[in-house]
Image (spheres, rainbow, N blue to C red):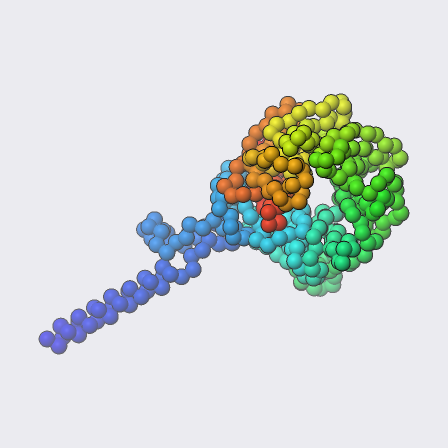
Length: 402
């Protein structure tokens, strides 16, 4: 009798140990790895039944609910979602430093980070704290950046040059060399080769290297202007937009010539490159979108309508624009209400063929995105943009689009 009880106790203890082992095994961390590959250590029947597993899509930040996957490229070592959120906090500006690496500035601290679009890893590049940077513009393949802050209604601009650590240092963070620029620079634009800047202060425009900027290269009439480089020798100057006033657009050559391209267009907003100027026009409370061909001088309507600031140009076997395109545009005073934040758009992402005027929807996000400052990688495989609603950074995979 005693032997039977002892055997029963041993069996019960063994069952308890097995149960505890199973519980520990299936409650340990089983999140997807940071590089986007699902953790496959639990295979066989356990993997099939998904005990203790997770259906989360790996991401730089939280809140990404659009997890369409693209696995068409043979050289990809990871699964690439079509749309991915890179940051959960506001940024001041971002750029590509390679075809798959993005560099950005945290808006609150001014710290600089690199995000790898393949491994999904993020690395701090500079921990120099410059708080409340509302605008960051990149030069020299991400090794130079202009910070703008607002201090007691005075616009402060600082140029930061990032330098690799010297000596035997193994530190990841770069050394920082700062140059303070004059106060109240109201608008800045970076040249297409990322080597020069155009700075607007009052009515004067200065062009050159931000670390050693000279005096004004030309002077404008009035103060309400925006700058946009056409190419390395020409700058497009547009009057600030309002539905209440007609707008004007001029091409300024650094050699001194001036050409009027757009004249008396109410609510004029623009985006330009060496071959085209996209511009919107307000009629009543509605907007329309058109393309001005700089070579032929012809203007062509485009549909559906969007704001040119939501677009970036792509030249690859033709001239294209990739844009955030509002799904619905209300009958309100535009573009004023959009600039003021009264109206916030909800965008699809579309492609305009500027030669044929054909429009193609590339992606319709499941969540609400108001797209600004779009940019594409040099191989046109990724679109980078900011969500105006919360200033977070996002990327969209454009493989097989062009």
